[in-house]
Length: 382
Ligand SMILES: NC(=O)c1ccc[n+]([C@@H]2O[C@H](COP(=O)([O-])OP(=O)(O)OC[C@H]3O[C@@H](n4cnc5c(N)ncnc54)[C@H](O)[C@@H]3O)[C@@H](O)[C@H]2O)c1
Image (cartoon, rainbow, N blue to C red):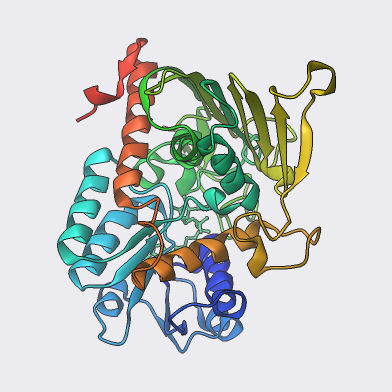
């Protein structure tokens, strides 16, 4: 496991749980946690890693490592993934895949050459209600899809004194919500209704400069406040709103922002089709709302489906019906699929680095559209 931050914790928890709840061909053993500067000995003890290392290059080529899990900021994904593939390791990598379409293609190419399994952790696909929404669409229950409305809203950087962490610098993050949140929102759209073919978008930055980060500044955390901290320019979007034309003929939108007052992790989609409609919001992640327009008109309405029955995807591994699951379960579900893929079982694992490339290609198209003030075809991005 490379990176002992927010994702290091979420992934370590999932690795510990996957063999407890799912039957797999492998017993996962947490060998090494790799950090950068801050000591990780306490982290290793808490999560049960056998060793701590501060040298990822040496660690990924060790003979006793089978899986490399990359939970570092986005700018480091490509170099780490390529090294892991060259060393013949199966790879889990956090989203967004990398900084550019070209970097993602390189990751996919090296993984293919090495014949390793790659899993890009767009974990919201592994919410049972989301996977069930896909089933309903695939079964034709919505008919022809006319609209996809995807919105992913947060509010954790609204304070203009929130520091310039790596998330707010394009050299580390690629972009603002466009890379961080639209990558998830577009992954869900692709998963359920397919690829985009064109975008028309506007990105906006509300706070143009921010104080440099002090001790403890991290994802969702401002750290220690320093009134004398120097300020530097913000070069990423604070919000990204895109009108999306899909290959299947649907017209939709992907709107993401970190300036949606009161919205914490509001990952939301609505789908409208000729035979029905669906609505999902991660803040009530066990629920899916379904309107079946083939029912008698007088009885129609959005039905709340509590997706906690054993028949819903992944649920049979967890608790009896009605005993809801949470954020952390999505990581466990994903790692189960990853282990199955390594064992050659199940469908090809998605999303992988090729999907990651398509997602960053979309993000680059959104960026170009906003900068050039015009509609951009996805195929323009080479
Ligand atoms: N799937 C999700 O929903 C989700 C949520 C949050 C973050 N992420 C993604 O996960 C990645 C990490 O985000 P985070 O929130 O955990 O960040 P974070 O800042 O909390 O943690 C990153 C960790 O990586 C370590 N690190 C950085 N460079 C390193 C190196 N060269 N060697 C070893 N360790 C190194 C840092 O010391 C830090 O502990 C990002 O790509 C982010 O987009 C995904």
